[in-house]
Image (tube, rainbow, N blue to C red):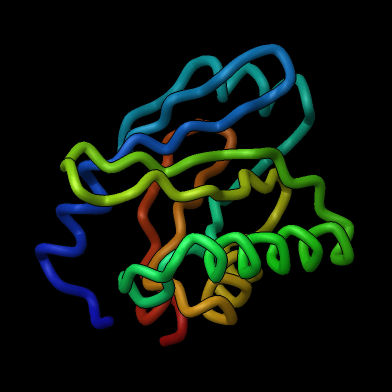
Length: 143
C-alpha cells in the first residue's frame, strides 16, 4: 500500500509499547521517552527500530499467518546477531488488532527498512539516542 495521509494518521495514532528489562516504554511518534533514553544510554545503544511482520501492506492477515511471519522475523533477527525485545503496536482506533512487534536496539535505519520491506511493511519506527521515535516510510528509504 502506498503512503497516504490516512495511513500516516493511523501510524501516528498508535502506541508503540516496548517490553524492556526493568520496565515498559510507551512510545508515540515524535515524542521523547525518558525511560527509553535512559535504557539506551545504559545499554550503550545509539539507534533502534520497531519492526513487525504483521499485516503486510496494511492489509489484515489471519492470526496464524501473522504469528508465522512474526516468528520468521524474530528468527531472522536472531540469526543476524540482533537482540530483539518484545513490543506491540496498539492503534488508538477501535477495530484494528494489536500487532506483535520487535524492538531492535543497534540496528541501522537502512537495515531496519530493508528487513521491513522483506516482510511487506509500509513503514518502520526508528530512533536514536534521544529516544524520539520517527516514522520512516519504506518507499522513502529506497530513494
